[in-house]
Amino acid sequence: MTIELTPLPFEASQLEPFISERTVLLHHGGHQAAYVKNLNAMLEGDERNLIEVIGDSSGAMFNNAAQVWNHEFLWNSLAPAGQGPSSEVDEELSRAFGSTDSFLTQLIQAASGHFGSGWAWLVSDGSGLQITTTSNAEMPSLATSQPLLTIDVWEHAYYLDYQNRRPEYLETVLRNLINWQHLEEQLILSTTLTHRS
Ligand code: MN3
Image 1: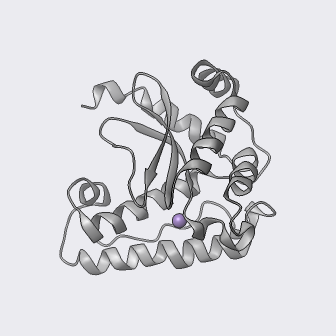
Image 2: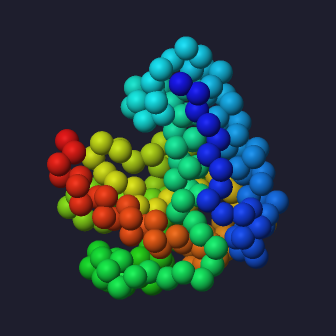
Image 3: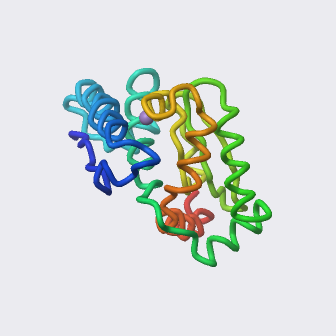
């Protein structure tokens, strides 16, 4: 099947001033589009969907497929500034991390400290919430955990706006642009996890 470049769920300028329109356009229309194009070139005549390809491939095919999925999840993890967590989400995060603020601090620390390219995640593994990081195109196991939120720590995500200041990028973006509604929807999905395997 042909993999599509899914449109952004907001206007490219709507994450300003925290992420510039220029960065969003290059990230989505340049980097993510290239993963889609590379993947389609490798998938010619292949009828599997994206999740099936991710679960059953390695090397360049896995890398491009996983990066397509990771970027779709990234854009859904972000939203124009002005939202906050519902009391339910605040309660869940407080149970796992002490408070929502402490959750953000721990996520920023984990993402800042990740060596090289990759992703930082909030996941639910059915028994609780965890912060984790993955390298390059890797993602948490979709079979055993539900990602709730991700942030991209590849340099292309922040270099135009923040140069080498990764902690400042993370501090700014995670404290202003989290799509709390999407996080809550993923949290609700995760309650079905125990029935999945
Ligand atoms: Mn990226």
